[in-house]
Length: 192
Image (cartoon, rainbow, N blue to C red; front, side, top):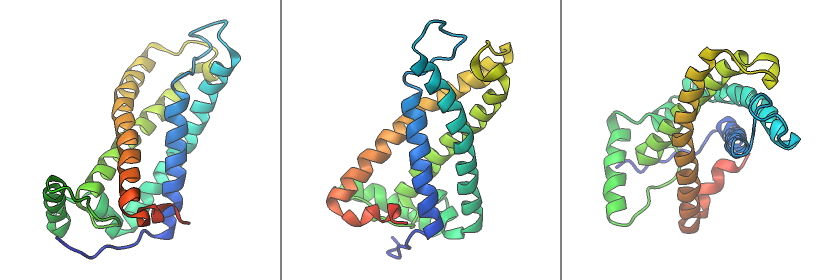
């Protein structure tokens, strides 16, 4: 296993913070939002959440696009998130073996199991963003009227992917908390 662990670039840390905030808001807002055409007479707050979810979702698409541009620009970050060759792939095997022995993987940009899970989470959130972007333009007047029938295709896929994003979100928070207990240096990713 490679012991060279590289610090997160400052721009990646900022994007990660934005990414964490918008994804958290979008996940929590979808729990109680209702579009106006679905439930006439619902509490106005639920309709407000629907509109906030749509607009924050559009902003999230920009944050995710910035994240992908960062991935294209920084080879080490790309290798961390998609560790499917060389020493990064070896780190996955070492991390799994370490977990079996009760050891958590080290933090930082080193690929391995955490990097692979981050990459899979990014792919799920990217899929949701693309589908949400399409849904945004299929809803007439921003939610006051029922959308066209084709809207159901991206909506069902968006709902399907949301299960994976919820799992990723809880797992990410849980593992970050566990790592923080063992090594507070993990929280460096939130230092601008």
